[in-house]
Amino acid sequence: MNSPTTTPTRPLASTSTITFRAPEVTDGGALWMLARGAGELDVNTSYAYLLWARDFARTSLIAESGGVATGFVSGYLRPEDPQTLMIWQVAVDPGFRGQGIARRMLHELTDRVGEASAMETTITDDNTASIGLFTRFAGERDAAIDQRELFGRGHFPDAHSAERLYRIAPLH
Image: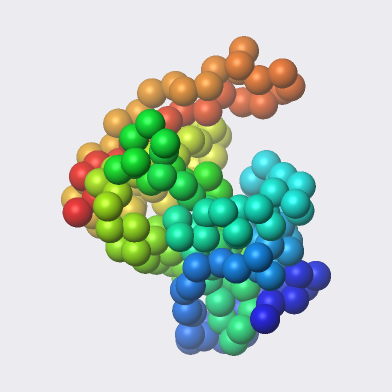
């Protein structure tokens, strides 16, 4: 099992084998640590990651190297549009970045959630890494990306930046 209190600070090896699986409740702490260590994500309470691992395991994914959590994707099928996989967060341990793990996780999760014909995510305009990730993913799937503002600054009660909706389709 994963330790919820530690994450790697550098890659085990550039040729480390990365495996993917659905998260379990016992992974909730590791998901929270990865989100906290990512630096770019809105980090929720550790409780939220435990619930996510329990209730949305089928539409989420954890990446491991040597039994240590190296990344995750959390997602869900939209209740109003169950053929759309909404990606909530993508995180990769800083020591494992640059190996294509995030993109590989998106492909793996898309293949596992076979009924999803579209993917959505929201990204702030200054998050060039996420824009690049989802743009490359869409290109590899030969899918189009439609963008529009989903939540403007005025929707947020704090200083949160506007979030643009990126819709990628078709996935297959």
